[in-house]
Length: 248
Length: 260
Image (cartoon, rainbow over all chains, first blue to last red; front, side, top):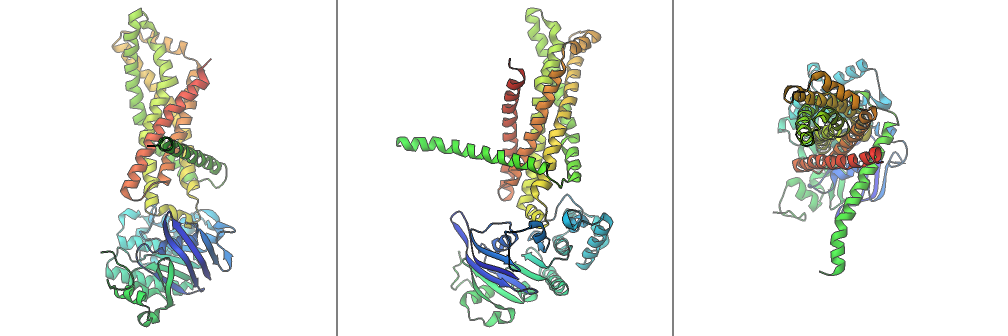
């Protein structure tokens, strides 16, 4: 289980997280929603140790994320980045098998390639595409490669940062479906951040809304439409008028 | 403006510059610490060796060729004022291997390599590839910085050595074809007056300049700001700071090696 307790983070005068408290139970798919710049990405990066919180605690299965063996800790995670974050200098299969070609999870090259091709197949890509470079792929394909890389080492916890940003509605639907299927079949704990409400309904078990650096509302996805929370209502219906101040 | 405000205006940039120098020193020390601790990424090292060493050869070679030729003409013109034209071969050789080979070679590598390292790593940072490396249990300093810094430290002295030879050849070609030197005498004078320390000191300078170029490229790339403008600024800062540090280090090393 992932547990964040009273997490604060500021960048200069900009207080992004102001006491974030959130629990993500094992095997559940939690989606964090919220406007741009509300600290969704910062929250994910704090859990991974990419950003150090100013105060508060973050625990995974009762262990503080800042303590202990970082490599062993990170080996439990997979992450799909917003822009894919694929390494341009490496062919697709080496991107997918990156973790399997070095470090504590290192396998023989042939075996790593085989696993990479299997994962690529799982996300709907052909083996011929394994030897292409990321720049030769479309946005949707890059997202699939990013997804294959995130699941290559069979992680227990998978993070998705804006998984459908920049994709057309049909490709977004395909990626949402893939994410849902993969999370269910792997039994992984998933945490996603997005503004895309179709994505939320497709992949979430639970939803948390981040506003002003704290969780404004949290509950099961089935309660999204009758939450009674004016902030959540304004957000999911995309209204300009409401308690959330919109800069015009 | 009060007196304290004037001091503050003067002190702020000085403190800023010192803080930057401190950050660069810590970055360089961390890079060295990663070089002596496993794992070492040999594939990245080999790739960097080709990019920094092999592909810089044309630029460094052409720079040395023209510099050697121009040097021969200048020394001949200067030397003829007091009937010392005969010193052309030895001064060209000493000038190339001690000073112009390493400095011009270093500056050309700074322009070619520091910029490309900073742009590549800066783009990786902006597109979250550095964060992706961390989540894949790979230390960015170990994977990106350590192999490039070692490759540059080893490759630039070799480039300087090759540049020295090409520069001397440039002087020889001008000396023989334009200044009517006897080919045999020219080569004889070149070898006779050149000491091994002249060459070795230049190669040591080359290693120091290679280290500076790669560290500055990596440092500015890793600290790149957001967007195209951030990467552009990182690239510019890498080239400018590497060039200035090369010239400053050249003075210090020359003082260390040759002052009586």
